[in-house]
Image (tube, rainbow, N blue to C red; front, side, top):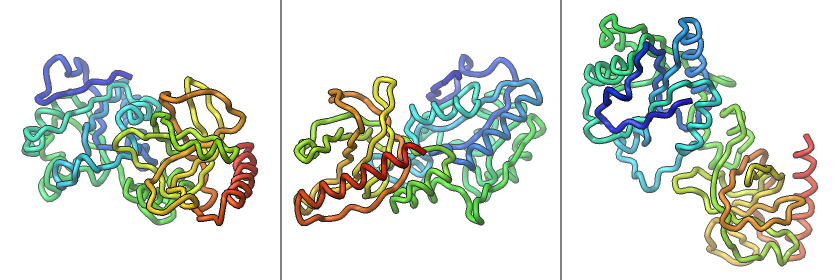
Length: 312
């Protein structure tokens, strides 16, 4: 897959020389609903013998249009992870538009002319709720009028599971509730985060359960407080383990939330390494124990459950 970062306006060197099928959307998380849109684009491209191009943005539109604070906004998929997923789902040319104020100020017709036609779209594919300006004047229903016969429009309907729309908002709610199993079902893959191994308090080592303390990349949406079964990948090798997202309340109140992972059958020094974490399954909530012995007994039970789950 070819990734093209575009600082508006679109330059001639970035434009495809041949017609493409162009998929549009922000696709935070690239969940099952997003995958339906990309798959519809892939089918159109294959049917016509064209490349599949996808255009997204470097920032969530809510930051620009909705007044959301960029410094505090959390993403389900940061740029590197999002690009990995786009390649996995069959995108050929991946356009990332930098969401400048000038770009945000484009009128719908100018956006269509400069970016849909500018990217040589023969077909434009997007979800039913995609907009390119204010909803009442820039909906998918109105796009054929702006297209003026220059490209076809394919609108992908809402994707529901169990009567509920699959959405990034729904997934965020599941993560907040520590319901990683639901989040993974809505995503269609295991939720994955990336971070750096940093030094902690070495409390786990004292208890016989040494942990890798993960400092997550800025903007990462971390699952809610609880104990999880995970897989961690470092230097291309994957290890099973159990993760704690919590405040270590057994050892004091009002502590910061940390992510600590006990890796099974693992003795390497990985401080400073960049790692990826696959969040597989929720085990239990965080509990304040009366002392270290009670906590160790629970950790032993957690390890048995985690190893059993990983064997599946």
